[in-house]
Image 1 (cartoon, rainbow, N blue to C red):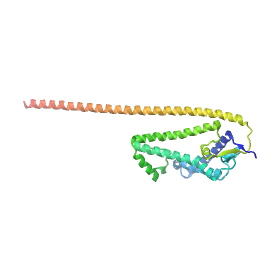
Image 2 (cartoon, rainbow, N blue to C red):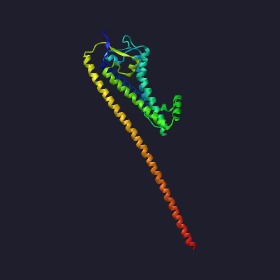
Image 3 (cartoon, rainbow, N blue to C red):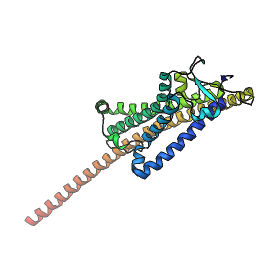
Image 4 (cartoon, helix red, strand yellow):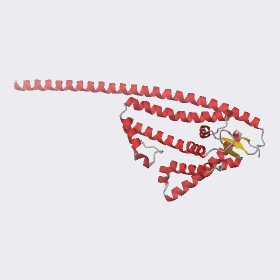
Length: 291
């Protein structure tokens, strides 16, 4: 049986097939959860339930040493970096964790950190759809984080909020950049497979001309990279405009506060003058009455 490196269309079709099947599993989980627990519980625990089904899917296939439905659909198999043997159990476990568990944890913890920072900065508790009911029960780690945040100054908290936002945007930018590199000349469609060094071999050669297909995907990668750079430029401009708007808003608030203080001072002077005038009139009347 001839084996060769899987091409980019096969990797994309395999991933799309897996996502399609996982979407079907999530839809069935949605129906079952709504039927037994109601829509409110589903909304509270939606991400956790979807994570459970994703982990179950990859544990029953990749972790157990079998092909996923997408891999079977396009006849590709996983191999390690040597491309001579299948990935070890540790590599497969690391792949599943990096592909499913790590993105969930990063997103959840960043949302909670932003939530804590906004509470400390604004003094109000913000509601967020990504926060489940259990997130309000603080663990010992988050109690410690809360104490650390409370000890920061207002400027440090605002700087940390901006840093968290930049990190989240950087992660999204990294994913887009990785996808553009894959389109141009890459063997890893997912970041998790690049980190774990897991490649793919195809069992049989496809009917199309690989050279023409590779040129098409190289062009697609160049377009994706240009779009990514354009998006980065727009994001930087938007960030700069927000900073300028915040500075203008602070200046307007300061000027408004000064105007209110000036008006209040003027009113106090007018009241004082009126009280003096009234007192003088009353004194004159009193003197006339005596005379």
